[in-house]
Length: 397
Image (cartoon, rainbow, N blue to C red; front, side):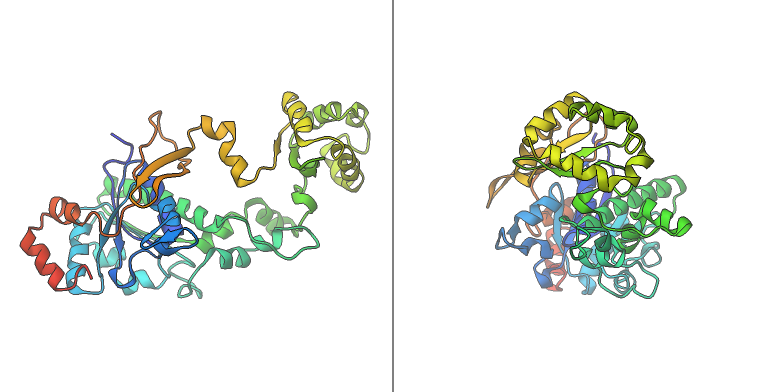
């Protein structure tokens, strides 16, 4: 069996953060039943440009492989009835909605425990279900601004800058997946479920880690650094070579000593200006220009190869295309393929979550309502008359 093959999650999810959290569970074998609102055409992720046609998009494919889809209007009594029957046979209800919405549409533990005392209700919201911002919608860009991330990112003379990826959304999805699994574990042990109140705001704040600890305990004020330099380890940053950019990182004294040999400046290892972490940090304005003058004289390959041979942390700064063809990407089985009726073979990156030695299998993201017959008939035991009646009463839109 796959690691999570005995887990069933009813997912009232949409767009990015929520589906990103559950796709890793799906890859591990969990049954993720996506509830898609027929009034709005299902998950909005189906329509994200630029690679979108009809109800299919490559964006949706990246977040929803290995899942099932059921169109269900939770605002109707009939649709609500189907949802409640699903709760009875599931381990968790997972959602990513505005903070006040789970209570409003009655998908919290107190709303559902009479149906299934062990149900886990994991709500990933923008700002959480409590606090002054709980009713506000939360988006990655907004959270990067509020949590100080943008102030930390970019060159010193440039504007505050967001990450090139939606890191709050994606990290929030991972946090939600961990919370959901912990909740299911506890519910199976104790027979009692719970709410998991997870938020993007909490996630973004939690990821401030040591800069926050430095500030709270020592008054540290983070500043942006030139060429993505580490705030305290020198050198550890991007450098320009003759034909591109690469990163060199001396996170240990031995790496600095090895670097001085590769750049043909072995005397710098004992130079009182550069000998220790503290010396190099104090004299970074002297050292970095010296290194820049040296590195720009050769190509990236001419630096990366000898640095790697000397076991100094280094890497070419790839674009996305180069990252996809890195030999290590291929060796780690990080590119996967699925077959799609509109797109043909769809290639995408695999989940980084690994459990055991068996590689996951991959199935394309579902068409909207594709799994209705199986869910309603095989799982819930509805016959054709019952399904027809539910349809007439607007359960499925």
